[in-house]
Length: 361
Image (cartoon, rainbow, N blue to C red; front, side):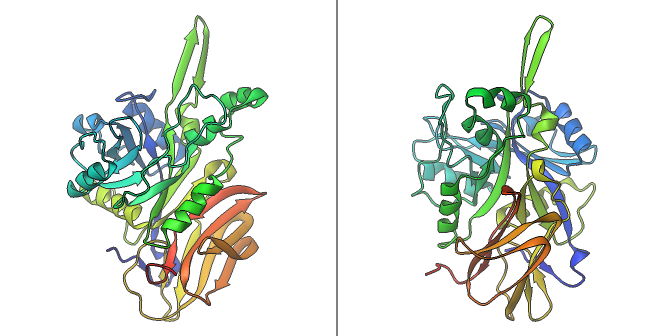
């Protein structure tokens, strides 16, 4: 279990920002690895997690590791034998067999040393029924490490309709909506039984279409990487060259939920601080922590731009503040998390702070 205790001064930890759930030409994506890395450099990302469908070819061809300052981790996207119940696998060197039994491949992946996140769990289609949705249906399964609460591609497709379709094709980030309410409720429910980490995924499937001299790219890769991001808190310096150490740090932060999810379209969230402050002067970031001595005193939050900062306890808003900084006293046990909104648009979701003993009554 990771210990991410942040002693004063609060800025002694390191934040890195990246994108995950990325498809390349090794499956059904529209870019190769060098183009993806180049785009990540241009938009200032620190890490990428590639998850081609049932493929570790990017790893086998030697792309995993540092590439011009960007750390690339190669995972893959798994599914059952019916191409349902998609699962983002990170940290495994082998591809599990497709199975009818979802619990079977979750367990096999865990035995291989991998971690897993349920992909686009609440995906649906109000329009464009010809493009099938792939929601998660096997909620009775256990052992997964987390869920993808915000899927950029799902958000885009689910809101294609009428005249807005043309705008969404030309400006794919402009009308991005929010995490589905029912998925947030499900995530909060899950976290009353055990800690379930959240990530935000791009689900990048850049598409290029051409007819003669006319060419159109749907979701250019640089645009895709300016959408949903997952920011990680590291409790030690981010190494510049040790690929194995770097990979372990990224996987550990993802698994333990030492992170938050942001929508870059609403503003660059890098530099945001979300901590629970204890009476011994220590700070802890979101996610799984060791048993903590002392008493929690308050939540500390700061963001780069003025916004509405909301504190939620067991899925319900219990306090909010408008501005760039907020301090929320702690008075009850429970599972807490923080949401930040700008002009009613979702901007940031932290992972939970479980100030409780599981299960939560």
